[in-house]
Length: 547
Image 1 (cartoon, rainbow, N blue to C red):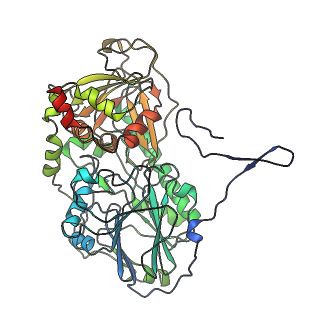
Image 2 (cartoon, one colour):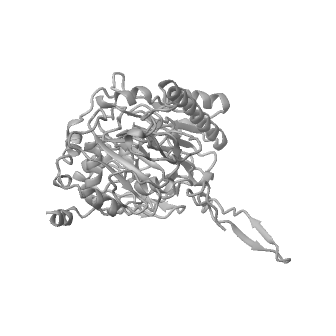
Image 3 (cartoon, one colour):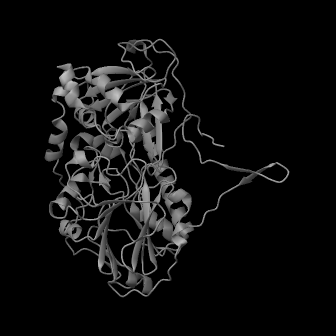
């Protein structure tokens, strides 16, 4: 027995149905054993300096575990999500040497603030065989490795819920997210019986079943990893409404994280994986509007409700687990970076990364309008009653001179000149940004725009979509209006040319949207965010054919 809630959306877990002796039905809730309890180990005393955790930036931690070093999610240079996210913190000057010395790297999922190809390219220059471990997700974490040009030769895909032994004292276990098992993972690291839990961006890590009283827990906290509501306008989306919505949602997220920490009772908690900034000048509005949670505010809330110790990390700061467990007041338990160390970045090297995006704008592919049919045929989404309008724009989301403005009817995968006369949901827009991965966002019940005359007769608000992630929870919504889905031309063409997922558009704030009313189209957005083909379109063959 399976059920789907809401209709057309997530398929829930299969229910186990059994019959009793009277041929009646028995409903059983499965209660499997916790995988981390297999082969349990009692904690041993730790020497001072034996286990040290150094914060580098965003979601990147350098763990010294006896004579082994393990690194989480190294994003140390360049942008994430095309050009929408940049590092808030200045990494320690020795970050690259630290990565060279790592015995293993864990990468939680494929989003570019965790899987940073620019960073890994630096590492691969000296150590292409560095062991990297990822979970066995439905969409491979390194699905785009070959196209990235990064030479890594030792990527290990491991099953969920099974201890991976590193040496006699060290082991780790990767767990899947209960909401997004197709892409998100978290990890338990155990050294001499002491557990470190890193839930990263998981919305419901391991379906909500997590070890209690671990020695150190770390998780995301900030929110703001979504384009909703900052990239929306029209209808209720006034600046006042957006500000109030953001304030309310950030407070909800803080309360949720504080409650989770209280329930799990770790000895120490560290908020991380939320230190990014929309630093490019063209994203000034997003930066000013997309207010994020303060880690100190969360830690103060935790202290009010529990005895959990908290640590707000700064780049280069090191926590000595042995010292902190023995005496939390030990001043050497947390070593802060030297006085005068630069904490926050005040400049970013935009040029090299923007040039990569801009190179796609003049590509020969886009001289032929039939690229549109080629691309969406390759994408493979059809037989769904939805019409989308896409508009290429400049930096300010005004129509790009000579850019494309087109309709896609996904019912029969046609490309009409005008909107079909049948009843259908409708989306217009340009490529910019929907949501990202950490914000907790709820959306109203979707509705369907029933009439679709030509654009001049559309209502004042345009049909558009929203893709929201609550700590990476996808909340994908389409809506109808008189405006459009406007996308920055360099990003949309880069995504199309390379067969990339649409996260660069949505999470990277590279679209502007209007909607009225709301229509929930999970199947459509989930496809373009998760289920696109693993290999890009064959543009070489396309150009030969078009030529």
